[in-house]
Image (cartoon, rainbow, N blue to C red; front, top):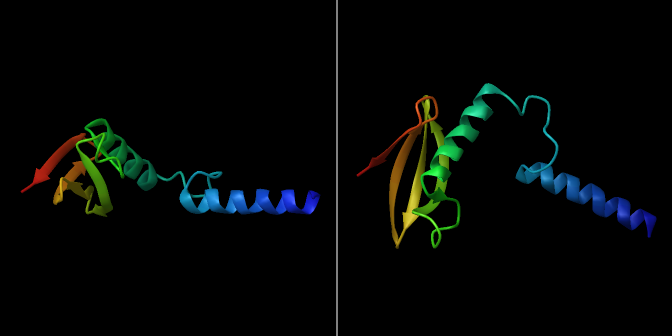
Length: 96
C-alpha cells in the first residue's frame, strides 16, 4: 500500500508539472512567462476564457506569441475571430 501511495503521488506531481499546476521549474518564472500570464489574465478579465463559451464572451483557443503581443483565436456561437493583446498596455484588439 505504501508503494502504491508513493506511485500515485509521483504520477500526480508529474501530471501537475505537465499541465502547469505543479511546482515551478527553474526558469519557469521568466519575464516571457510573466508576460504570457499577464496577457491571459487580461483576456480573462475581458470575458474570454478557455472552454467557457457558455459563461464568457468566447472560448479562448490557440493562444500564442506574435512579436511582442499575444494572439488567440476565440470561438463563439460556431464562429471564430482573432484577438491581439499587448500585455504591456493591456490593449485588446479584435481582428475582423
